[in-house]
Length: 154
Image (cartoon, rainbow, N blue to C red):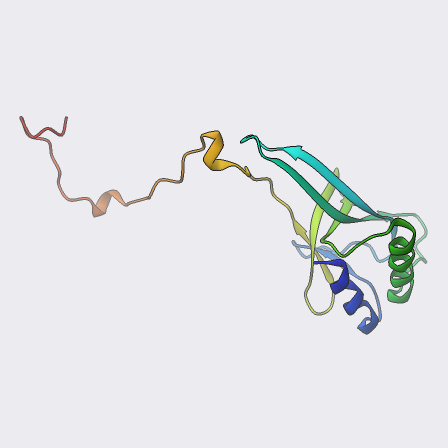
């Protein structure tokens, strides 16, 4: 989800709620402790230089159980971040700690923001020697292809 989309959604919400893909809710007393831009410059295993930018929201649970982040407050935080950090529209990545710090993509299900699990992938599969997935067939679909002498199959 891009920053422009979250700015469209927030004004129509009564509360800001985040939920993990497994249905678990982020406790409602969370704080957004950081809004920023993360730039990643890297080279993939195929030798291509890449540059990625994401807008980062960091969620944190504090012991202040009476805290509730309202949509207007989050909009104010975003606006201040855009002004002070010269943030442009980009994809949002959310950091949230469970057992360790996780990074999530963000979606909206019509009521809550959903933290979508991110996965790793090779960006240069054609260059780094990863074979393409072989076609799977059932052994039962094979006809009897017994090798006979001089057939050239062995």
